[in-house]
Length: 259
Image (cartoon, one colour):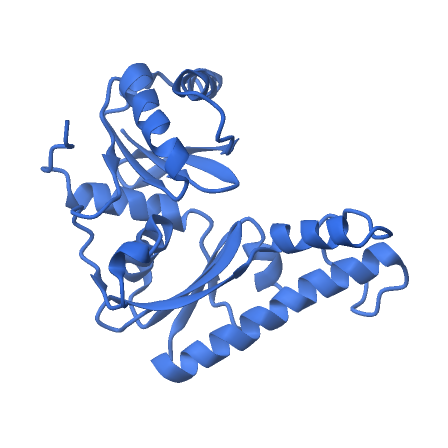
């Protein structure tokens, strides 16, 4: 089995693959202060709860956009799984041409999403990832990563509104009864939800003018909710990043991780 690990700024998402099938997935909070042992214990408990044995894991592949956690996460897999992970970094074969000013600036998660998106859906393609940041990535018909746009994520924006406006409460992201809110909570939900729907419509629309008739794939926790309110998104794939990690591992199967 292959264990894929996506270390993001808000969550660490784990996916266990048997061949191409995702058989289990888990989500942990990203806590930069946690040690390799703490993450190891948490992952051991997740495996135990799912009735799985860690010895079933033959390979691990990791992408991380949180540098302080890169080494602790690597130690976790070596110590608790007995496997040195393949880390998505320069030198790893992705099969993706990167056509930007500085390829080293592109986050590993965006590369992984692009690999999965093109492999599964073809191109041209726009990938919208609703995470800590909302990212829009453009992939050409030939499978080249062309760049994209980065905006503050929904959770960041919502928290900023609560923190900076003393009379406004924290609210859950959900569809209000109407875009014209009749109370503070519904007004905030309408502004947040339909504001981000408008952002998706605007950015995707402009990208499609440059790319042509591109497919639009969305991923991330709020993707289903946003996709239900816009015609700009063609498909939601909640496990796009995990699939990308699996695909990249397969392309590097014969590559031995550096000691």
